Amino acid sequence: MKLTKIAMACATALISAQAFAHAPGVVPDEVIYISGASAQDKALKALVGNLCVAGTLDTFKDTVNPAKKGKAYTSYFCTINSALVPGMSADKKVLINKRSAGGSGKGVQVVADGVAIEAMNINNGNCTDNGDTTWDCSIAGGVAGGDLFMKVSTAGISDVEPAMFTDPNVPPGDVAVTPAQVSKMDITSMNAVIFGVPVTENLYRALQIAQGLDSTKDDEVNMPSLSSAQVNALITGNIKKWDQLLVNGIPLTQIAGVTPPTPDLFGTNPVGPLVHYCRRVPGSGTQAQMNAVFANTPCSTGVQKPARQADTNPVFGPIVQENSGSGDLTVCLQDKFASGKWAIGVQSLEKSDASFRFPKIDGVAPTLKNVAENKYKDWVETTIQWRNAANAGPAGDALAILQTIARDASTPGTISALNTKFVHGFGTGAYLALNTNGHVPSFPHSDANPVTTATHAPLGTPNTCNLPTVNINSTL
Image (cartoon, helix red, strand yellow):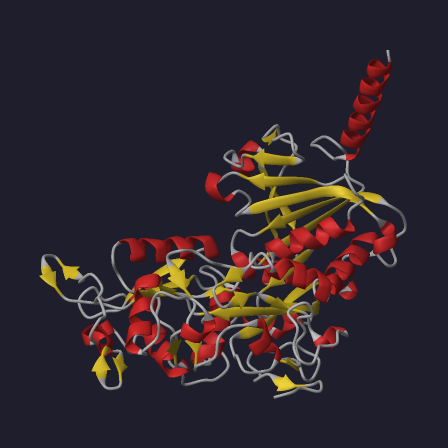
């Protein structure tokens, strides 16, 4: 009898806990649609989870790529704890739909102009319960089949500020963002994201050997380096073949101990080794920051823009492959490495894979400490934006939730916990809180309190074209 009562009590408790979770068919009190940069997806998941009443969160992911569920669409459905959201009227069941397909380019103009884009439907009988508050959702039916539907985004996220999405950062079929569109939105910096220039593991080892480093180690001491000028030449196509990359006047391919890459062929004729460049498509915020940091575009006129896939030359080089998402870019580097090629790419420090490594840039490693101490240059301030009140922007509880997400995206504690998931041989990455959001750095720097001491927004408006300027007491 006692065992029966205990079992009934446990079952009741389990049913009660499950009842709080929000499956398809539960009617939300509020729905928020966010589109744009995929680089913030892990951070967004953590931020939303922090706002939910314990035990109420269900997560829904598309299954277009079974190995990378949620690559295009993810939805979060929970009861938001109003005590954690200043200005929220009461606890509410909130469904947050995040579209990552299309990257940053889908977090800017369509938001400003209120243009409907595809969002994932979780109530079309298309989602399967995994039994652990996660759901797999097919979107194979598309809009016609009801798995997707057209909806205006409530907010957008971009790796760089909206004004950066002019040539060469305009998605195919779109036009450059205009000052008028920018003026329709409230734009808030979320956090600092560290980027790097990943190279295939075989190229990394070659650079280590050429620079007298231990090619069996991945620690900071033994990281090889590329200069900003070399990166510029590689991504613009000025260095077309790897034997044009010199170390102390000697082609890298000819240095003792270096294993050259697999030769490229034009038909049956050797023409290589050609430079292979895995880049992102126009409209990607990841690509936009690389364009600005290493090619000074669209910041200045009269500069050479990074090579496009159409610039590929199978005889003289380079070989350029444009990739829609960061996951696709990783696959590009994997494929080049597997075929024995040397290649470079662009990724945030969120990304890691056995096929590539991040070298130093100008002799400086992409660490949290080096960004905080203003020694490493390749970092940007991610923004979240929504239409302002004059342009029918979000209001009430939806606005309060978005403002809290923007605020908490730069909380050092949240970021520090998130960074532990991004482990490299030289340390962890890839986020820092912004001192412009009121956070105070530690001296000396502590990875437990990752906060910037400089900003790209000295006048209050984020501008990736600005050289970072120290705006809080710093240290050398």
